[in-house]
Length: 92
Image (cartoon, rainbow, N blue to C red):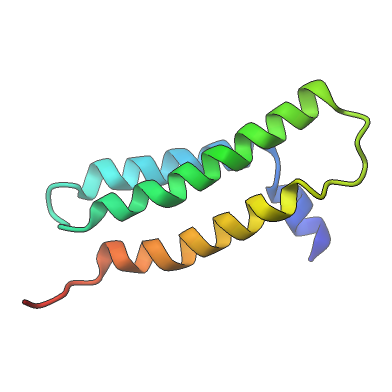
């Protein structure tokens, strides 16, 4: 499991995830009323990609990555809550 997280928590996969959420927002913004919820996970994935890029560029010798934990938690919470909210239809 740790290898999978290490493989996915790199700059390119995080950027691709962010682009996917923005593309979903752009595709569904006219048909889904709550498509703006997809921008929250896109922002969280952008922060994680920015953090990973910064660490790889300016501090490559760091081997203990405690800074990745808040980013992973933020990504998990926003993805698991905001994606269903974007596609659930509430009847008024």
